[in-house]
Amino acid sequence: MKATPPADSLASLYKGYHGWLLVWLRQRLDCPHNAADTAQDTFMRLLSAGSYVAPREPRAFLATVARRLLIDRGRRQKLEQAYREALARHVEYLDQAPSPEQMLAALQALEHIARALDLMSVRAREVFILRHLEGLSHAEIAARLNVSTKTVQNHLVQALLHCHAATDPAL
Image (cartoon, rainbow, N blue to C red; front, top):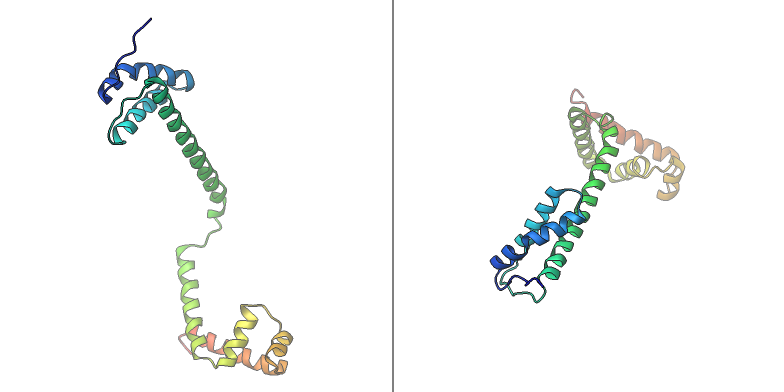
């Protein structure tokens, strides 16, 4: 019967069981490089864990730590794969995305409209928002505000003139 190497320190655990752990991992992983990385990560995990307490069953202990690392690696690989797939799905939309210049122009137009909204009468602003942001019809706005549709139309014309003036510096 072969005597088990001592594991009273992390150094002796490494010297006595690194080779065994490497073989154990190679049997479970397709890549010897991944097995070597995982064996190294196992001992790095133990090294960074703080104070070392010698395990009663060093092989079972190392196998448990290595299994947990493999589970973590599997989770990370699934997450990375999901991220790559999400990126691949969105690549087709990149051609349709607005250019930085178009985005800047839209932002500037929105800022002008916001300033124009601030200069409008309260009622004209309210009608504008109900029509263009909430999508209500003239009749729905008139019913909600208890005014005629002609009044709604007048407020919309006033609001649109304010917006046009805000976006056209020549006016």
